[in-house]
Image 1 (spheres, rainbow, N blue to C red):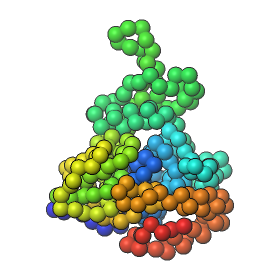
Image 2 (image 1 turned 135 degrees about the vertical axis):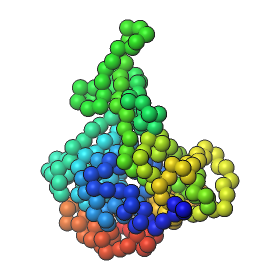
Image 3 (image 1 turned 180 degrees about the horizontal axis):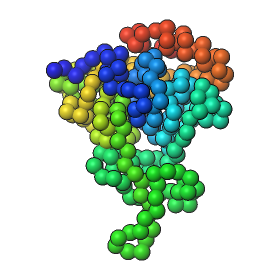
Image 4 (image 1 turned 90 degrees about the vertical axis):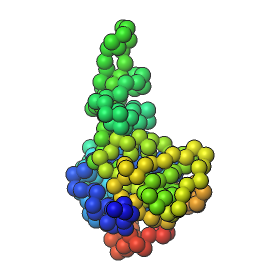
Length: 278
């Protein structure tokens, strides 16, 4: 049975209220269209995991989809704060959210432990910061081999991981290349996987730093050209810096954000997504 589906079908079948979701992608290949469809379907009570929550998580939080954010850095890259994130955390609008903050290495290792079927991973990070005392799912443990103190982070297994990639072949395998961040680890750790891709191809031509996600791991694939906009997809389109700058003004006030939400998300279908929302 083909794993290809419309974006609406893929999100409806795989994202449920109350799920832990991971939308990964590091600087590029960010699954923006998929995030918009989650908002459009008004999913609620989500625990959202991402190394670098940026515009898409600002939008998900502002739309009231998220109850908890697990992350290791947050901001509008090159521009400033995430205003909807800040408003939800500090003022409870549109709902109060809780946060769990990690380092990049720590959160990546949580994925690695989940992907490896292990209860936790160990590393040397966090020492020297107050994250050790203030963040759950971090513990100081004794090395079993010497007198060193090391850090352990609990495994994380998202209910669904969503990524964007450049290509899928007709068998349902996916290839991504360029900066892939922790996407592979998040996929292997997940119970369900949704991938949006730029195009479907007959077969892959290996690219520099490419990774292959085998079809056996994937629940659904949706072909969504420009599905990462305004981030970029190596080999397909560049980052739209103007859109990141414009988002700062849109998100700054509740009224302007709500207007954007009504006009650009709720009033449009996923089939209309062309990477052109401002």
